[in-house]
Image 1 (cartoon, one colour):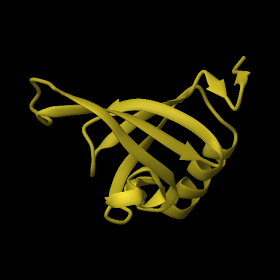
Image 2 (image 1 turned 45 degrees about the vertical axis):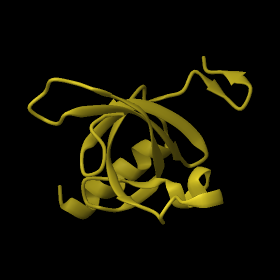
Image 3 (image 1 turned 180 degrees about the vertical axis):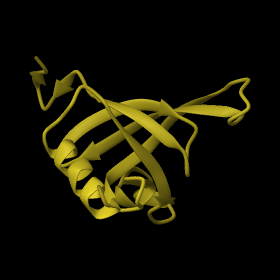
Image 4 (image 1 turned 180 degrees about the horizontal axis):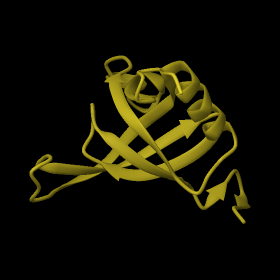
Amino acid sequence: MTNDELSASEILAWKTRRAYAVAFVGKKLGDGMGTDRFGETSRHELTLWTGERIGTCALGRGWPVRSYIGPRMYQIYATVNGVEYTGRGFGEGMAVVLRPCAKQKGKVRQ
């Protein structure tokens, strides 16, 4: 399987949701200052391992951890194709395992 075929299969998997999926927290989109701090420009890219952008994510509250990976872990909130996900990770440049949020626009996920 080539990298292009693998990337296409991952994009298809994101469209036909699984119980969880792995993505990477990319670079920050904008400066996040002033009134933009809660908008699109205060978020990070959410990418596949190939670097292809599939959505956006925001780093929520962080807490100190004792780990060789990093000193701080964050709750990460992501949006892909209009579906909201959550997971825990170490921030920009790191992988995060995401699961769909329990409630999606007023509906409880079955």
